[in-house]
Length: 513
Ligand code: HXC
Image (cartoon, rainbow, N blue to C red; front, side, top):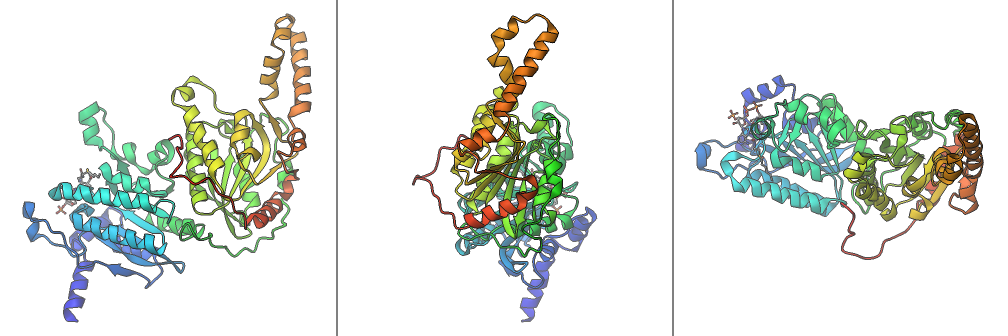
């Protein structure tokens, strides 16, 4: 017993008091402190505390630290089980050895068998240099498990320190990445290699800090100002997710009335069709208690994604954002939304789409970078999804973007429109130019031309820029009063809660990656 207690105490010290102090001086918590912050008090069951590495080269036969740089096990968060690994920077800079990888693989294998999420806390100098290829093998073994677990159990990565080289690919293979500001960075090649190879001088923060990955690359889904906030974010995120793909998401307790009328929505659409408004105001107005956990907030802001509950039912929101790029769909927005839709579909989370989209973003830059194959991902994701899909056209639904945004034709279950919806092949101005090109060429007088254009635009608007034409064909199930939207969505979610739909049997699709 004495030996056990002594060994445990030794293990809990990781790389020793000096290195723990250095960790704290950097504004970071230790691996074990992070686990204590995340898990319910007293719930942590640790595995493999007495594991040490097996390397003898470079004098490592004389340096052994119990746990070998990663703390692993399981516990509960708000009473629900999770498996966890937390990299310990105080032991060889948290670098990954063969035995360290084995520890992570062990909990991942078990998590998959019991159907419980895995949370990885990353803070590591990458492959343990002294171990060579055995360390690389360890990484690849983790990648393989990330892939097998994908779509079966939720996988969440917190980046609370360095994450460089091929090590970035394990978090990248998980469902959600969260980075802490200032103390974390991710890159495949660091500033020194960048300088040598390309001559570019750049700091770690500018190359792979949280801000860069939140706004430019979209690699991180969440940014936290510090570790404490990051831990709270993970807990919040988990509250929307089921434990695995065979379970329904948890039903939250809801004290917000389901028939709450939101008068502000009746006037939120501006008089002028070209005027923007903030779609997040609509989301907050209809969700339970106005709560919205936004995902990838700073990336591709022309589309808004995230989680809400409706009468306690966990739901994914996909909404065009008219106040950024007029809500146009572009490459980044398509990829962002497609990935989120596929996550929701894999984990039985219904999707509510709020549509106000003038079309795809035009231009050579978009075409050259592949808006065709990237836009196709969004169509694919919506068309493949079998979870309940509810669509509300708030205002514009033009052209291909109408088809894409969870239309009836892509197996939308319940499709509603607000009274000011405009559903057509293109906007009145563009349509008039195409349809009356010959007539317009014959009108020289600018005033007469303007009059003609205004008249034709108005005719076109009368005919198409309203929801009745689509409703006439049953493409829209009903035209609803905006203030009633919350109630209509909840009703739809209730009836669709027993929805069963499937896709033809196949090994997998050939989604246009
Ligand atoms: C072995 C390592 C290590 C590593 C750090 N350490 N990285 N030991 N292998 N990869 C050790 C240091 O020797 C030191 O030991 C302790 O960890 C803390 O490191 P410091 O350098 O003192 O800390 P800091 O100044 O904070 O710098 C952190 C760092 C730096 C930026 C991460 O250590 C660093 O650049 N490390 C190397 C990163 C790297 O190139 N890794 C390989 C990437 S490629 P002592 O005993 O002094 O405490 C890769 C391939 C993966 O990972 C492929 C997967 C497919």
